[in-house]
Length: 223
Image 1 (tube, helix red, strand yellow):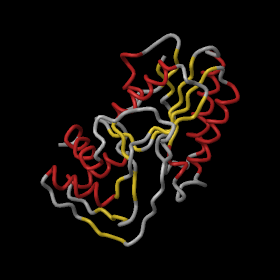
Image 2 (cartoon, one colour):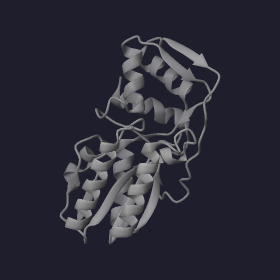
Image 3 (cartoon, helix red, strand yellow):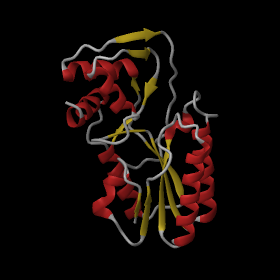
Image 4 (tube, one colour):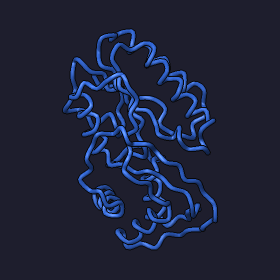
């Protein structure tokens, strides 16, 4: 069973199963502040858990909880609340905290979609020189999820992220190079870095050089 219609949900159409709930519906915009959106996701999680108590419940959460600039945001507090709710009520669960997923389509507010749109429409970008983000290909998200399902290493929280973070200027420069476009940008000498612990992530990335990985993402989904 797949709950959701977005970027993550669409990954698992070929892996749909009566034994598993892929819950990928709910608040996806980290800037969200509307209380009714948070309540809607909570109600749907509770309803689904009550209806299918014996299924493996896979919930796609966020690595934004490690970002100090967002730690006390309504979005992060909500995601942490949902995680606790699932841990209390689900018999079998996997909570996958995903970093910035990159794929074809999806929410225009997703980082790479936003940057691509701003650059290709010649709109100005305000860049924080020292800010970093962790990008991960949705195909890696899918492979990691299926690997954990098959291992039956469940009832845990797993950080799903790439090996290294990327500076925002690095991402912009990679777009410029691949798309052969000069971005309109204003650079500010600020920005924060936050790390994501992936020591527990038992997964081998096919591309381990970070700049090659970034170039491949842009070529694959935006070029």
